Amino acid sequence: MTPINRRTLFVSGAGLAALALSACGAGGGGASGPEEKDGVTTINIGASPKPHAEILQFIQDNLAKDAGLDLKITPYTDYQIPNQALNDGDIDANFYQTPNFLESQEKEKGYEFHAFDGVHVEPMGLYSQSITSLDELPEGGEVAIANDPANRGRGLSLLADNGVITLKDGVEPTEVTVGDVADNPKNLKFTEIEAAQIPRSLGDFAAGVVNGNYALEAGLKPSEQAIVLEKGEGSPYANMVVCREADKDNAGLTKLDELIHSDDVRSFITSTYTDGSVIPAF
Image (cartoon, rainbow, N blue to C red; front, top):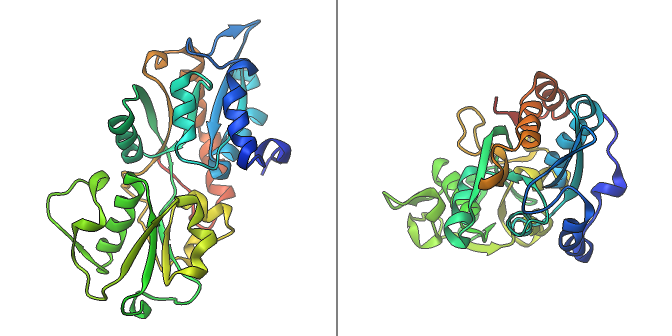
């Protein structure tokens, strides 16, 4: 695995907010999209630290120069800021979200974005520090789920797919809420918190549904530690590079899309994330 610039990746808290606000002046970002200068197109792109920024760093270190690209990677540990930064023109693209999350964001906030083809799947899983099987879920136990609409619905659907609960018929996955639970045999209590906080808060709950990227960042091993895990094959939750609709034909962004779907990147994913926590979607 190509070494990652740790100074670049480990930005958090207030520093992230400041970085997001200042990115527009950092070169490459702007409402007009990335532009070529002296044969090189600089792309400011926001990404979750794992695995998205790692995949982009591999491209920067090994593929970008020959393709005439220079990637400026801004890490975000939040699910809201990257789309706001993209909408505001502070970055040219982002790489962290799934189709259902993008759909809910566009519906809620009126964004006009374009999604390129899916790159990889990070299976969502149910984790716990106190139990190892669904049978051990305690009567009235408290289960943490994400508080954003897309991941809340995805988490509840995972539990329904594994027989923990049943959901009302006809509800779209992005619109599923706790109120749509039709049958809850163990009378579980569902507590909604920020998705990034769930892996750090597992000790406070009987179990928690954790997004794949946050599981990786927390040092969890999905194939070994998840009580149940989403299936990767045929998943509708492939992570995508997203840009503003007006920039969908930008030459630099289409070249990046080519690189991120290359055999080199596929090999990087399969050889780096050997525990099944990240699965190529192409």
